[in-house]
Image 1 (tube, helix red, strand yellow):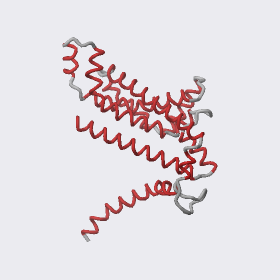
Image 2 (cartoon, helix red, strand yellow):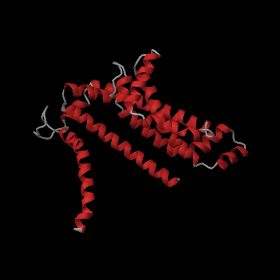
Image 3 (tube, one colour):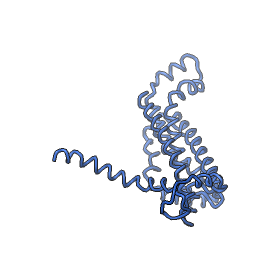
Image 4 (cartoon, one colour):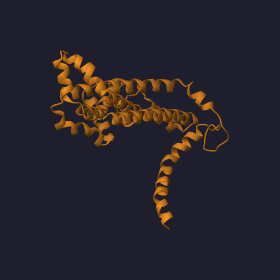
Length: 257
């Protein structure tokens, strides 16, 4: 009985995780299915991946997603570093303010962005997507960069200035290298969040700036095809690789701290 009681919790956790990952496993398996439709296994094939890389609409959607993700990542890092370094004396009091976009339901933020851009009469497209994703990225960038910056000894900066280095050289050669692990982790986190985002993109993209999640959503309305399964599998593999890189950087950051 004691042996069974010890196994009950691990088995329950394993069962829950199996239910969570079962849909993903099914999707990946049927992306190699030879049948053009339905969920009856007829044989193994890589034809859908070949067709995936020959579909122009997918590459256009991927291009839009990459432009938005890299732009949001770069702007979030630049503005995040500026906020952390320029407001270091006041940020401790208002640091919780930057957690609000994470705590607020994303559907509320998406509708808010929609009304904001409509009120300002800004045409929807890649610029509105980049602005919205950058504001979302700041909710990750500022707290993480601020936490790393607080670990820095102020005497190091003062010593650099006392030795004749300018404020700019001190930032480039002292502050920025110290923030480098946090910069890498924040950059990957913002990139993944922006690339995978659907709700904000759905409300802020417009008709001519379809991202990859929006393309998948539009194709699912027509009917799930093995090409969509193949696209989802490729996206899943890339996302897993990026999450692994992010986790490795976070571990390295904790070791340094």
